[in-house]
Structure formats: structure tokens, C-alpha cells
Length: 412
Image (cartoon, rainbow, N blue to C red; front, side, top):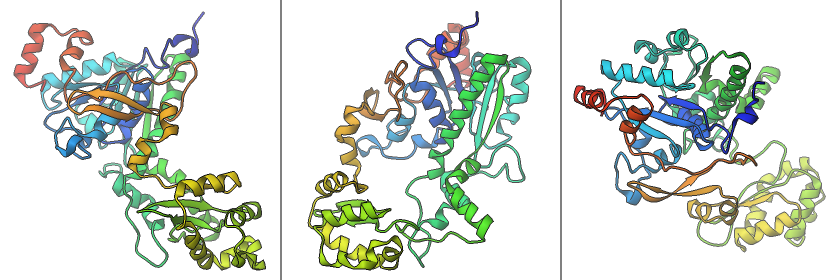
């Protein structure tokens, strides 16, 4: 009898899964991180001539730049192997093809047409390996009139419309701190990948997954799109304001750059807030009882709440408001997140030893499966750290051939 997927796994959900990962930047590597953290053998195919962009940006350990000292790359590529192959070299290209044929899953995030130019596209591979699952991720997907447009998440934040909605009323749009769409797309792609694995288990056939970062991200703007298609009404910038909740904002607290987020959506939460403030006289205005009345007086209410919150630390206000049923949360900075007792207790932060960074904290997965939890097994690799291991143990390359590959420039 054929075993089900749940019976095939041992300690880790994807323990027997083999992945050839040609992706770079953020979206693609985040997908393979799901797999690697849950036991898959993920081989990152990298190039010393054109290293992943996340190897070239900070934060760097001890603020010393270096291709193997970038914290962002180390975080996204824990539990993965790095094999440095020159894809512009004919023998390097052949080696990459051998890795693809070894793999169950191929992930790439190049501009459409790049893999075709190397003869590594899905249509070619499928003829040899009809069970291959091939995931392509790009800014606008593999089809359509603008499919060859290049770009990163920062561009897509604007293209999708997030920038139009971010900022204060009657002021210019504000840029996002990070490439927001890069963190949305991987969730959709990982789900499609798991569905494809189930499909292959049932049918023996692979799949091509075409991931458009723009199309994935638009799901997070569904209300804005629907409001226009149904009412011809354009979304507008409105700072922290919300169409149905007042107060709804971030308020200054005691201390340097300390803040608390508070939102009130109904009369019960409003009563809880008033009780926390010990019913100051201004809250007795009958107009404030209704959401509509509070909407009309939003600026006044926000100013009064700010006067109150500045007297306390965000932690004591968070505890007090939460106890009264009012949604509230302390605004944490990086240090506070790293030292957060909840995250530490839940095992959300993984401590690993990196070859060049030293002791390094990784973010684990945000969910835990009871029988097959994600695990910290190996810190993010230095570039090409496992090239020889991959060649010898996965591709059965002899010592003589390995020397020839290095000499020819196929390997870095």
C-alpha cells in the first residue's frame, strides 16, 4: 500500500525533499527557507561574480561589511547549503543541470527568459523529469505584456498601490522601510508548492508554478480595489486613522521614543478605555458614546489620549488596557524584540554559530507543527561553503573532475 505524506515523514516534514534553489534576493529564498527549516535538503546555487543582493546589504556583524557578514542573508538562508557555480561557463551550466535533475523541486526568481537562455527552463526539464516541481517567482509573473520588467519589492510597493495609501492626509506618499511585497508573495508560493507536492504524490506528475509578486500582494489591498470597482471611490492617505475605529493610533508614552498603539472599535472597548483613564470629564460628552460621534471628534480625542499616555510607560498601559478588554500594544524596537520574553519562551528565536559572524540570532518559523517542528540545524552559509560537498556527495564528482571544474572556472 502506498504511504501517505504524513507517513513518509520522519522527524521533519520535508526530510526527504531535495531542492535546487536558483532564487536570490528575498521572495524566493523565503520559500526555500520554509522547506529547509522543516528538513528539506536545499542547495543554493550562487555565483561569486554576481552574489545575492542580500549578501551586499546590512546589517553587517560589528558593522564590518563583507560578503559573508550580512545578517539578512544569514537569516534567510539558515539550514541551506551554498554551491558556487559559474552559470556563464558551459561546464558550470552542465553541473547546474545535474543538480536540477537530482532535485524534486526547482526554485528560481530570475527575470522571465533568463532560465530559458541557459536551457534550464521548465519545458526542457519536464521532458527529462516529468515529476519535477518548478517554481518561478518574479515581479509580474511569467506571462503578460510586462513580464520582462525587472525590479524589486520597493518598486512593487508603489506599483501595487501601497505607497499611494501610506502617509498622512493631504501630504505626499511615504516610502516603506522594507520591500513589503517580498514578504507577502512567499506565503502564497509556499502554499502552492505544498499543493503541488500533494498532487505529485497522487499522480506522479510535476507542476510549473508561476508566481507574480504583484498579483500576490494585491490580495492585501482587496478592500481598496473593491471599493473602487463597486463605488468608484479611491483610497486616500489618512495616517493612522481607520474608517470604523476611533481612537485608532499610536500615542507617545513616558520615556524617550516610547509609544503605545490603541484601537477602539465598539462601545464596550470605549468604556474600557474611559475606565482606564479614570473617566476624565471630557469623556462624559454624550456624542462620544457612538462611533459616529467619536469619528467627528477624532483629533480632539487623540490629543486628549496623548496627554494621558505621556504619564505612563507603554508596558504598564498595555497591561492595564488589555485587562479591561481594550486592544493595545507596546511599540517595540529591535532590542526589545530580541529580548522579548514571549518570543524567547516560544522558541521563535534561534541561536546559531555562524562561521564569520559568530553567535547569531535567527528568526525561526512563526508556527510549530507538533510532530514535525522546524529546527535550527545549520547557520546561514558563507558563499560556496558546500561546493565540494555538493559535488562529491550529491553529484558524484570525482576528485579529478572536481579539480578540472575549478580550473575551468565552472566552480568558484
